[in-house]
Image 1 (spheres, rainbow, N blue to C red):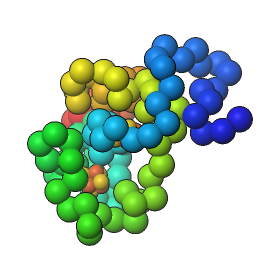
Image 2 (image 1 turned 30 degrees about the vertical axis):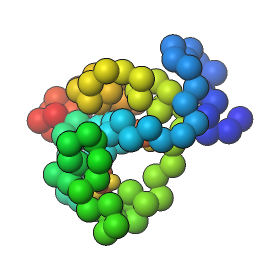
Image 3 (image 1 turned 90 degrees about the vertical axis):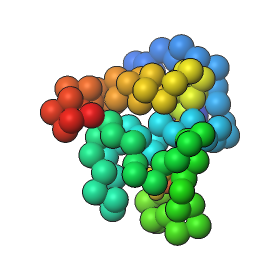
Length: 102
Ligand code: SF4
Ligand code: SF4
């Protein structure tokens, strides 16, 4: 199983996405300790069009992030808010994100 194969218990709803489409979800949904970023809150460096404002100087955790099957579930959604909500739902982090203010 590669990183683009959804877990067996998870029925994929969307077409597979293998390349990053700069949807911004992974810059907004997860907590990123290196940036002091809580769950569900867009990174302060995430700019318009979901582009990174410090791309050349982004931290290692961002440089190392690789697209996986979750991208296919979130990237096609129409708004960043919807993409973040879906990302958190997939990982079961909705309640935690609400507690974090996300
Ligand atoms: S969630 Fe996936 S498609 Fe969206 S910006 Fe992150 S790596 Fe790219
Ligand atoms: S620093 Fe850039 S790549 Fe990293 S989470 Fe923020 S916007 Fe995304």
